Image (cartoon, rainbow over all chains, first blue to last red; front, top):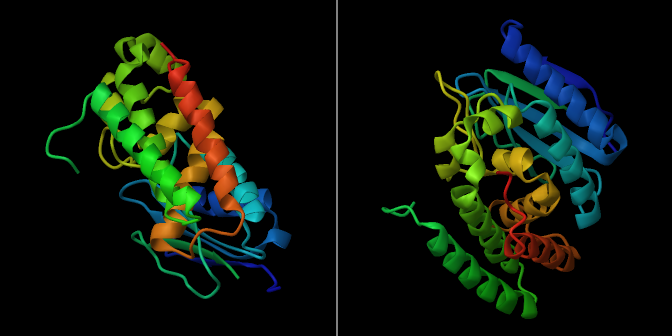
Length: 107
Length: 149
């Protein structure tokens, strides 16, 4: 399993980027580092939205549902700041689907 | 997007149709059952939003979230956005805020539908769980419990 670490690509840290950073950190903590191969957050400042791409260590339905439950908690936690969508991907298959000024990759 | 928005009965009819097709695909063991079952759930929630009296009560809406307005019952997008002076809510967020009892079932169906349509396909073992999810949402809708007003 790949060791997880935070790579932050940003021009400056404004309030939105701080929120995206917090979302990414919470996502890793909630799902659990041991359950993740990769996790990336693509923030769209204009729409105050975030797209989370999740690559699970084991991509079976039980692992997905456990991660979905955590994403429900995160959506509720950030609901006043962000509109959050997420999806599960295979390793090395990152495809940004939102404007990506604020990108955070855990790899 | 349809040119004319559906009314409550129209959404219920589409939900029934998707349930029928989803069941047939499920019996065949086809992963596309997840897509049909999710859209059955989507239309059941759309029907609930359109008929929920809470959208006629600004004070109750405000108690749920300060940014929800009566017209938000008409949202059709899955995910919202906050750009501009007014927030645009998505169905997923409305379910989270208004109908928490079915949130887990709705999210499972939505993510499974995404897996099938755009991503890695439906993981093995998912279909029985998705059947339980759509049954829970259908029963909640039939019992009239998808309402906050």
